[in-house]
Length: 53
Image 1 (cartoon, one colour):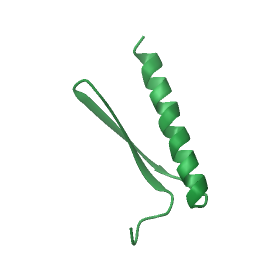
Image 2 (cartoon, helix red, strand yellow; image 1 turned 180 degrees about the horizontal axis):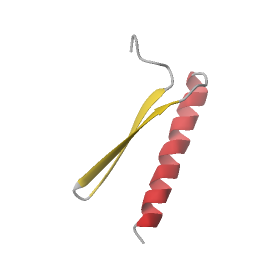
Image 3 (tube, helix red, strand yellow; image 1 turned 90 degrees about the vertical axis):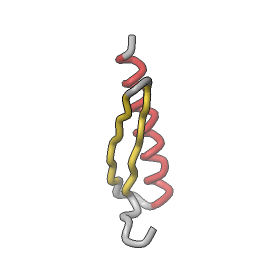
């Protein structure tokens, strides 16, 4: 998308009647940013699932 920073990612999480989002701006190249975004999303999901216990 023209004008969009290469490292800008939004990650969303929805559960029951609630929706959450996070904004991340990674500084690597495009491939590294994709990996960093996936890692951030999985880490957030893990933290969220643990908090449900």
